[in-house]
Image 1 (cartoon, protein in one colour):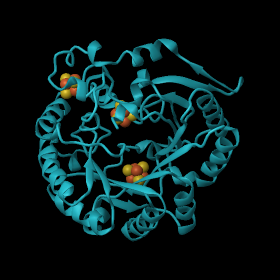
Image 2 (spheres, rainbow, N blue to C red):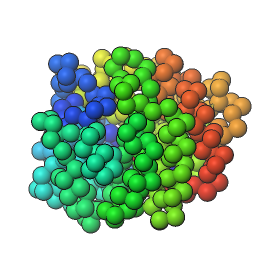
Image 3 (cartoon, rainbow, N blue to C red):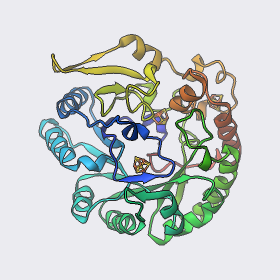
Length: 357
Ligand code: SF4
Ligand code: SF4
Ligand code: SF4
């Protein structure tokens, strides 16, 4: 189940959020850049996507908190179900901070749900706060327990200086909640003024602690993944859906290839390959950009051609490469170091029974 094989349409409903995490990068709303996706655009891209695939998979994601727009999500799902000739697989990425009614709908309608939580309340409530600075763990954990009984559930922890060396404890806590699939993502050192240096961890420090916790989790029957190992169990020349590209409909009505390019005005222009034309009610695509994105394969990337792990990496995260180096064909060296380290240690025994978020 390589990450490159996760083929889906992503709908980003809004930049708004009902939480404010200390490391949040979706600063757009704070700068007056609040966006909500045009529902007609969302319907148009759903229709176009369903016409072009046999195994439809629709994912709802932020770039703020997707469920802020739960009523729109319900309408879009009803619309998609009404025009699809086959069942649609639905995925949600969420902060889990919602009412029981919303949880009940999600549990019944979504095939897979990923909830963000950074460990036990003593850590999670320092990093993931409500908009009025209150703790969020009680509600999020309640919903995790409920959803874990109703559908397939994975959790994702953001790793900072506060919890980088507590990954075993995080495994223990999630295990106590009955969770079988967990993931983590480190807050990276700053690439620009919009990133939060205070919480960032050196990548190798993250990786060494992750490796220890991965083995610990495995012994407890829990899969613990991250973005660096996502293609370890199958050969590929591409990294992820971004390189096909599979569409991500942004809250400001663009089509991007990557979660990272969640708005049109954040400097990741080359990852935006379409926009919604309100007058014609159609999506206009830029085929030159699509061609460049499609050609992002290890054989076309100078650093990857002779890399020892290239077939089990696929070129690493395109969004990170673009942010770090200004060129999405040039991977981030520190990520490469981590990928090679983890492949040497666990490349032969990773079984990805579950897709990465
Ligand atoms: S839940 Fe996500 S979008 Fe909301 S503040 Fe936290 S990191 Fe940002
Ligand atoms: S952020 Fe990285 S892993 Fe996620 S869609 Fe973009 S390229 Fe793929
Ligand atoms: S580890 Fe780095 S150099 Fe090697 S294939 Fe992956 S992205 Fe390319």
